[in-house]
Length: 201
Ligand code: MLT
Image 1 (cartoon, rainbow, N blue to C red):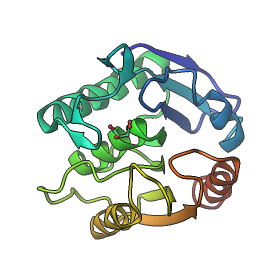
Image 2: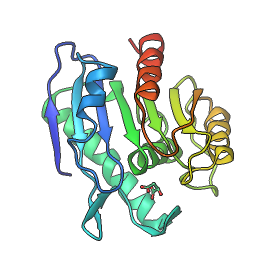
Image 3: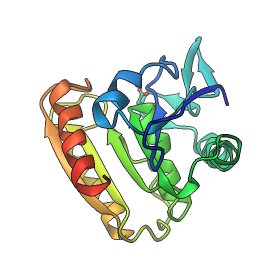
């Protein structure tokens, strides 16, 4: 996968940056700086192009995911993480995903398909990736969900549903609410930073 890796000063944790639709691997670099300026950064570009816009998996229409492709691309990302950890010599067990929108959805999909694929996950405006499976065991895995009470793409009830599904797998879920639609606001990033200091640092 197209990506950039930046070695951090404190290389214990690696932030995996996953952009939203139409973004690139550079989009979330300023957010990583706000969350943990010392961590390694692995910033990845989605493999799919939708009308020229990079994404992490195909969709049939807005909010309706191509499930077969979601499963395929989730596997590709998980394998990429295994390989990147060997190539760049960071700890595979200490990856903290930071995803926004489509990037949050593929990060959530990792949690739906693999047991403990990440150390933790920060999901900004995620959706429920799929509804037809029992989640693998994620006991104790910290998850921050930043959601919008007025998010037109992801209604409030879907954010709550995702939190419940992850709680059911044993994850420790913190749900943070904003009123900025689907946008990623500074207050939401600062809340993720506070959460990171408490649960990860
Ligand atoms: C998705 O397709 O992953 C969601 O609808 C969010 C987005 O628009 O990227």
